[in-house]
Amino acid sequence: RSFKGTFFHAPVCGGMEVLRDTLIRCDTEGRILEVLRPHAPTYAAALAEDRAAARLETLPKGTYALPGFCDLHIHAPQWPQLGKALDVPLEVWLQTHTFPLEARYTDLSFARRAYEGLVDDLLSNGTTTALYFATQHQDATRLLADICLTKGQRALIGKVAMDNPEQCPDFYVESTDAALRGTQAFIDHVRSLNSDRIKPVVTPRFIASCTDAALEGLGDIARRCGCHVQTHCSESDWEHNYVLDRHGREDTDSLDRFGLLTRHTVLAHANFISDANMQTIHERGAGVAHCPLSNYYFSNAVFPLKRALEKGVRVGLGTDISGGPSSSIYDNMRWAVASSRALHDGVDARLHWENRGIRDSQIDWRTAFYLATKGGGEALDLPVGSFEPGRYFDAQLIDPQAASGTIRLMDDLDSDADVLQKIVYTASKANIARVWVAAECVVGEAR
Ligand code: GUN
Ligand code: FE
Image (tube, rainbow, N blue to C red; front, side):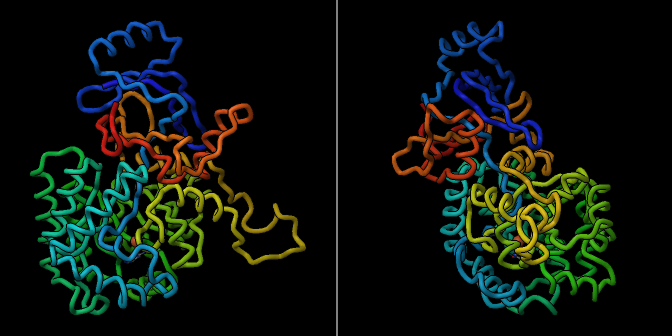
């Protein structure tokens, strides 16, 4: 397939590029072969050839294609409680709301209803790649993989491991053996599907929910299978202190000792990491899912994003459904920008605004856009997130004129950068006209 239109992307952090009237040609797998600008010598011939072969899709005038988003942290089973129970601390929220909800996923018809709704919601919000925590359950977790396959979303999925009876309720706990065998069985199952869209993930929920034996065994599985790892890291005061008490070290060092901090690891939150922790994360090549909206609710905290980026840590964005009350990466881009300006040290009205908060901690919308797209792809080592040869054509089409949309453009006033900035700050679901994964239309109608 090939696509002609105007594309926005961020090939580097903090940068944006506009590709006007550009032709993007893909191979049969949906990977980008060529990006031809109008002045390219082969542009006219390629355009004519693709048109003649009926494989050209011309994007409507006045629309803009952006890379699809990568959401690096989602609890799939928590979608039914999105926007509920945000006023209690993490440890209370888990025991009174979240574990009872997740325990329901032994019921496969409930699981189907929730997971189909979730995947539709995410795709129509422009999220083409999702890194999911599922539940403890083998069958419901396989069902999530099937639903992602059917609906066409690129997904990395983990059967959640939680075998510590001291932190997990008796209605939602498994044996160490079940945690390890179940993780291995799910990896084998996903690999037997033979799809490059779905990948298995070793998923110790967090240190508190796992015994040392499980953490050790999961580290072994991750090493042997070479697959991705995801877990929560230094998210809240209670959780961070629990690990200090139990292991005498911080989450980062503890995970590292169990072999769970690898090039394929994504740590959710990482709010309370020290400079030394940051260095370890960088050395191991692990990535961070920055979940700004969730961090406000659970931790009154802001992840030290700028410091991480300066250090070269790979960072992307996560919604943390349902710790954050929105399934939209647009909302999380906005919160990433706003929270980076937040007042870490209290408000002192006598200070000039530039001197409040933590110096040099601010990011702008360009950085947020990179994190939501190519940053997420890089953190996962997946070739997605920008319109460059070799990457999959995972994209969303923005129609600023959509009837119930929320973008207001002024043709004679807005530069290209203004248009993208307005999209980042004001787009809503109604503005997302089409979504593609690997050049295949998964939302809206291909023309
Ligand atoms: N820590 C352990 N489990 C969870 C969860 O489901 N959500 C969040 N935000 N933190 C967690
Ligand atoms: Fe989470």
